[in-house]
Length: 179
Length: 311
Image 1 (cartoon, rainbow over the protein chains, first blue to last red):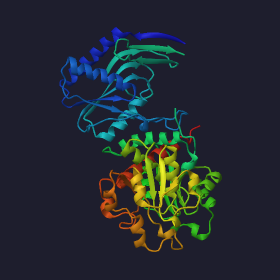
Image 2 (image 1 turned 45 degrees about the vertical axis):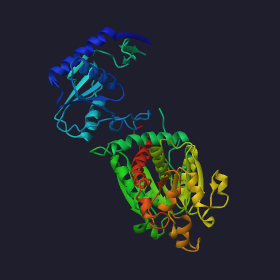
Image 3 (image 1 turned 135 degrees about the horizontal axis):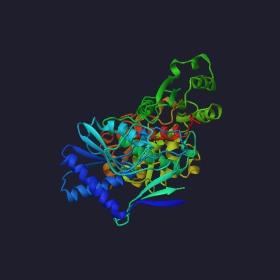
């Protein structure tokens, strides 16, 4: 098993700042925008972006939800893995809102497809955007592309991309694992 | 990854505490789902479920059907009153005929104890027991325990008294198994004619006096007097039953604490429970009904995840 670092702690924080900046550019004060992190790993990224937006850009009353897509996945009963759910916390209706879906790694696009279906249960959004920290290019199974990307990587199928979040954000990293 | 230890839900007796915990955890998520503006998830869209009801039922059947539809399963309904059972067909034949039409899961209520167990050994489908005679009614016990957990935070260490017709009640037996597996202390209370002999062997105490039982407990589960299952008189008159075992506001107010009141429905108002108690804040009867859908969704979801059609 070999490992390679794709982003170190410094680069991660620069990337997060840039992503937050791009969000502000498009959504200004977030009056009609909501942020939805996908459970479980997208939520960690979303929380960090929300805290940057609140601290550095004085965004107030940012609507932030957590969405679990387990019951919407298309591989139920097809793998030996039992799909276990996480908490969904969306305390607002997304009807007419501009939604930003956040996930850490975009790979086949199937999770995002499920998330789009799941989102319909909370209303009809005006618009849906996708933000991801890592975009694994050339590995999509569905026609889904991100609107905001931290870093593009070209990775072969056997390799895994893992995002590590440290407790107080002093040792975050993205690593490539070859098993 | 956790999954159920069984392929059928035949009774609480046959599942583990781990299974119950997993069902509760999953039900938490489904409870959130059924409180959304759109209460439906597509998980079971390629699963067909047959509801076979050989005995009358309103709320269990409705609850199962809603759970199935909210999971997007295809549903077929069957009731014995309008079927070939009347023409002399055997249970296995009836079910196998239905299974030939490609059904993955069977939810069955039957007047004979053990019907579900018998069926699980003879047909190829997952069976969910929705009540078999006076034997078990596992989903009711799960939703009862789930409602206690929701109201009191935990089931372990709580004192629960089951009051009424224990002899004819599948709810009582399943409840005893479920509550004990979760670490609760259980007593039964009722006319001695309606308490099965040797029930102490299940580890429950018999308390013939309702007032003492209420003073002891945290939760009182009031069962319905099942007149339809009684061929003989088990107590002198309904009036006497009410005097001794009916839960009244007066009885509750005599206690120095506030207990939780449950009832599996349908209620005989004025018999086992008076209207003012049934409609009070202490009663969680309608929460039980709401939780029933979430619990049944969890059970069906977890059982369906073990059926593999794509290998």
